[in-house]
Length: 419
Length: 143
Image (cartoon, rainbow over the protein chains, first blue to last red):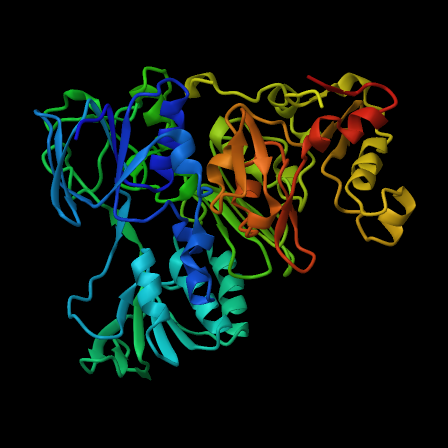
């Protein structure tokens, strides 16, 4: 089969790339995916609550037809960059797809250091994982990892009546997204629902071929029928060997992939969790495996693939926890390790802001989040926040008190994003 | 109804009378009556637009209908989409994750937490915004 555009993946990066391409070009587009339809991985816990897979769809059922993309159900197995050819393993064998331009939007894969194959051992990043866990009978479970996936998962499992123990290697929950005080609040919310938490600990041994119990490094033994590893994801770069070095793909600011010798391959692009991108808050390249980042990268990639012009200037993590009634939002460097911390902690309300060189580099907000996006925007714009720190700590920031806001109000487009 | 792009904010004409907020709440109420909307329907905190003031500067602020809408690009559930260049909101699909709240540069996506987590945002009243109609000093216009 021949196509003008080949898109590998069907997650947020792929979706926004597809929509961006369609602004410029109605040329043939084939999307390779093992999923039946685009869905939201952030909603996978809904499956455990009894939701139908289609309820997780991130686009309505006519979207594929509307944007005019052909979904080839299968797995891309290898890519011949010179001949611009992809071998796709499909139900009936192998399909050969030749393309003019290709997007790698292969996402991330779950990190799972437990190598034994056991009945009752799960990861939780794919629809198939969620379905498998839903149909597996268990009363008690150990969730390994207290990052976003782990916390959301633990909270959902508790809500549906399971006994849940969370084991986290670091000294607090959400250790990468929150600062110590923020973690303390979330830890209390978790414990209040009846979740047990063991910090600075990890699973050393799983007992039974079919999970019966785990033994922790601390020596503690916990009876459980399921162990769910939710440590995080790492860029899925199995297809990209030979065209990158390091942990993830590092594309150019047009999201164009470079060969190992640094030469741009002007017909291959990459976007989303398979990438390592510039974090503007610390200047380091890292995977920012979150929906907003993937969408923006996909948008930039798609625009450039179809002959438009857009630039990805780098990003930073922005995340929001949906597990509890109390809203928990954080962005940028918000663990307390970097920057001058200013904060308000009134029990019900925590706001920490982190400032470096007059610029906001991160924040945590728990309990009040109206207008919190103004802080995200301040990080993105790199504005000088000297003199308005107090305002930034208010539960509802008054934008009229921010010196840059009157000018900001006039801007709804970003030239570098080709808009 | 005529297609509009967005509500235009004119800070120089805003008198902080808050009439826009009342008009917004009333328009989105069941009764369409301001007193009932505020006193009986409990909608006092549901205005999609909000007046902010600092000294002589004031404005009513709602969704700016960005050309690059961070909210729609961040929506995990497909509730916020771009339709014909504008952001459309399907409240039924909102899961209250508040990612849009976390990324909106203008506070246009407002978190509602009364009972169920949902987002409230300006829907342009289908093309004839109540706030614009109500503003006595043309501090809100349409384009």
